[in-house]
Image 1: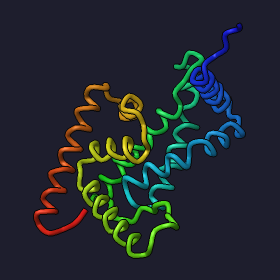
Image 2 (image 1 turned 135 degrees about the vertical axis):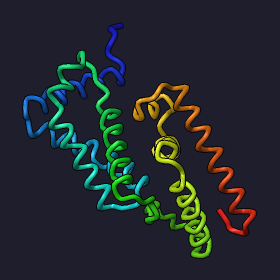
Image 3 (image 1 turned 45 degrees about the vertical axis):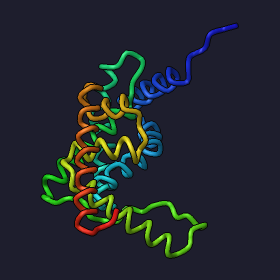
Image 4 (image 1 turned 180 degrees about the vertical axis):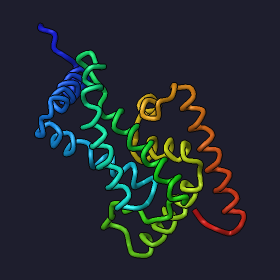
Length: 197
C-alpha cells in the first residue's frame, strides 16, 4: 500500500503553490484565491460589523493585501501554508481598524438562512431572539466578539480560531471563556429587565 499525502497536507501544499503563483503575478491564481476565500472573509467581517458594504470593502482590501504581500509570504513558507488562516487574521484586523475608525458597534441586520417549515409567528420570535443575541454580541469588546464569531458562527475549532487571532490556544480559550461569561451576564441582566433573548 502506497502512502499518499493526507487531505490537509494536500491543502497546505496547494495553498503554498497558490501563493507562489500570486507572487509570480499570475492573475488567474489571484482570481482562484478570491473565489475561494472572499465569501468567507466577507461573512466574517459582516458578522462583526453588520454592514455589507463595509464587509465587501474589507474582503477586497484583504485580497489586495494578499497580492501585495504574496512575495514575502511565498518566501516565508516551506512548501506548506495556511493561507486561509492568514487571510482571516488580516480580515479581522482590518475589521477592528474599521470599527475603531467608525467609532461604532455593529447594529445591522445579519441575514440568516430562512427556514420554510416554520410558521410566521415562530420566525418573528426567532428573528427577535437573534437580533437580541446580535445586540449582546456587538456590545462585547472587539477580540471577544471575534472569538464568538469565529467559534460559533464560523464553527472553527479553538486551535484554528486562536491561529486566526494570532494567539496561543490557552489565551484564546481564556478569551472565549470571558466572552461567554460576559454574554451570560448581559443575557441575565436583560432577562431581569424584562427583555428577551
